[in-house]
Image (cartoon, rainbow, N blue to C red; front, side, top):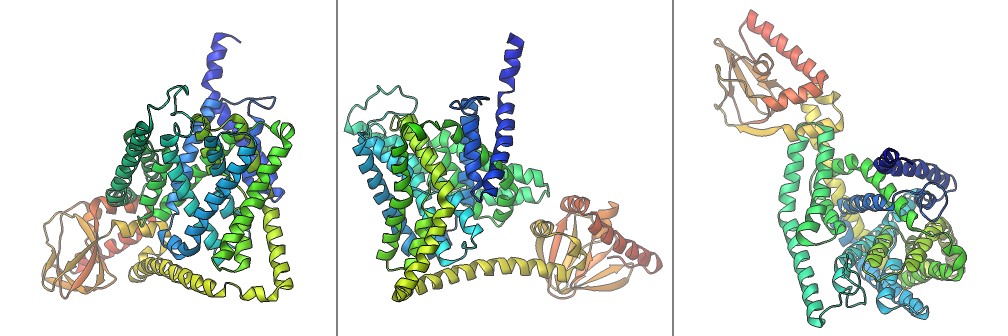
Amino acid sequence: MTKGNDTLHQDVDLIALVAVGFVLASIFGYVADRLRLPALVGYLVAGVFIGSYTPGFVADAALAGQLAEIGVILLMFGVGLHFSAADLLAVKGIAVPGAVLQIVLATLLAMGVSSLWGWEFGHGIVFGLSISVASTVVLLKALEERNLLNTPSGRVAVGWLIVEDLAMVLALVLLPAFAQALGGHPIGSDGHGAADGDSSILLSIAITLAKVGAFVAIAAIVGPRVVPWILTKVARTGSRELFTLSVLGIALGIAFGSAAAFGVSFALGAFFAGVIMSESNLSHRAAANSLPLQDAFSVLFFVSIGMLFDPSILIRQPIDVLVVLAIIIVGKGVISFAIVAALRFPLGMGLGIAASLAQIGEFSFILAGLGVSLGLMTQEAQDLILAGALLSITLNPLTFAVSGMLQKWVRARYPGSVDFGLRALSGLVRDLDRTRANAEERKRRQEQEITKLIGSFPLFSVIDEDGLEELLLLFRPRSAQPGERVIRAGDRGDAMYFISSGAVEVAVNGVAIKLDAGSFFGEMALLSGERRTADVTAVDFCELLALDRRDFNQFMARHPEVRASVNEMADKRRAMNLSKPVEG
């Protein structure tokens, strides 16, 4: 190939990776879906096909790694955005101790097996942690397909996974600090830079924790004040693309900034970006607008993980692969079931949670990758984890089916088991109902606000829900006491007013007309660009919604049907002013 062709080849490496990756992921994802498997299996298989271990097209691994990093950021941003402290608190009695115990016991089990294989202690810890955590993506998909997401078992499983995710975020932060103590090396080291002693290790850990603490403090104090304010300002522009860009800019900016300034992982920064943004009233729109890009880069993340997998390990070490799979499905399942039963919750819930956690996914890949970079995991171990993930995700539907059959068998064989754990379950259901009621109340209040707006001002009934939310952000509440002059003739038109309650008197050339709640005034000066031609005075206590000139022009440009109604009313009032001078 000529030099020019070499340059062309280098220039299109990124395009080739994205194009081929998306095409194969869509094909294999569809095949997986038709086989009633998670689409995630298809994405991983697509990565295997373009990896260096299979013939044919080989994608650029370095570029894939960078795209995978963006995928990690957006995955963790999505986890934080959907993180609900209220939901977690509702199931804390089982999710927190259950997840912590399950992580510890599953890690110890995997470490025991790795010691029999002759692995070092540090390698066993990373291997065990990677196997102990299930995939949130796979779990949510499985629960949604079976209509189990809003059941007590489903809510507990999601809360359990949230605790696991938080624990893994902490592990990602602490693992580099403990790497040398565990027999590894810092990221970027050649492995020969041993620590000077225990004091330097402790100092490194202390510095890491101090940086993380500083980041969390700043994120918790400054973030909830700044991020929602930024989103509100951007949302008021009405630009969908600018809002989406701002959401992604905040996610990637906080992730990169936290890594650069505080040395914390991209994953932790992205997670906190999502948590901070979830405090905004616009969080649902942020989630909806960023979802397509999250999905796209998440696909590339799983494709890049598949590229790392060497399929030959299934032939070279089939027994080891089966052992890893047994730990993931049987070992974790038995541990989860035993914990739920020990906490005195129903046996059916224990079997459901066991099936939910009998797989591994995104955090396993992230931890394994970090372990390799720290010298705490071999390529062989990473291949075993990838094989375990592929097989456990593929078998997860079968695991749920077996769980369902076991529940029926237990109820038929031991009828008295139905009463086991009912007391704990009733308390859990009560807490979940309270949480759900609070969430529904918040949603109901927002819906009532929109309904009230449409009921008071029917001209807004043609606007969709996003447009109405935008309008509520644009409005600036104002109040006026009886006798207070709201508009003076001769002033420049700076806003249009909508009367929520009360009444005003509009006076032009000595003639007055009364406008009650549901009416609007001040639009003529904004439409014509001329000065005010009327005095408007409150005749009783008034609640008004003001729409500034700039917001008025932008909103009306985006909603011509509303502008047409306002123009029609303005024309009628202008005609009335000509016949008997009255201005609104």
